[in-house]
Image (cartoon, rainbow, N blue to C red; front, top):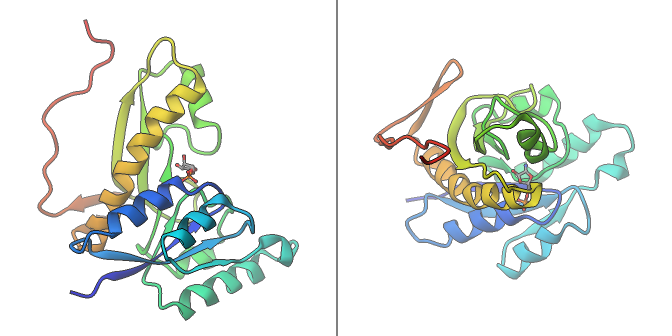
Length: 217
Ligand code: GRF
């Protein structure tokens, strides 16, 4: 079985990237992390990827000034050179133009630290606490030109506790991110995800019948 060649795009510490690398170590995982690309030269995740023996490269957006198109062409060139078939955004902090998104139709995933479509954008945990939600979580979705939108492949929910700080909530969500990203990538790489409108159908997948209710009585 040939494994899907995946590039992970990062800007920072790369803990989701590390979770994908870890999952892909299994011989039966249908994707291999063939490349890690950072737009930030000193992103912590680059060292983690190198230590795992994975090819890394930096495409520094600052070198392109305001020329977003040139930055993205350079990014695309690198992906093509490495024969990448699927892109995973993992804490990649650049907005992508419709041109770049169009190069990867249903071939680019993103992870967002909230239950979309709630809390698009930044500071999701602070905003979730301010909004008083009892359930929060994370989402893996296909990338479309509109930010933090696109068909949802997988979500994981966590309870919000009364005593939660932003950091405590972030840590709880991050643990779920590290589970749902490898899951979503596996499902996509196995060809089990089909998109109809805004919905993803997952072939041969069960969903739990239990509800997550907060608070407990
Ligand atoms: C994660 O919370 C991810 O959901 C968001 O940015 C953060 C990146 O963390 N898009 P890491 O670099 O994967 O540790």
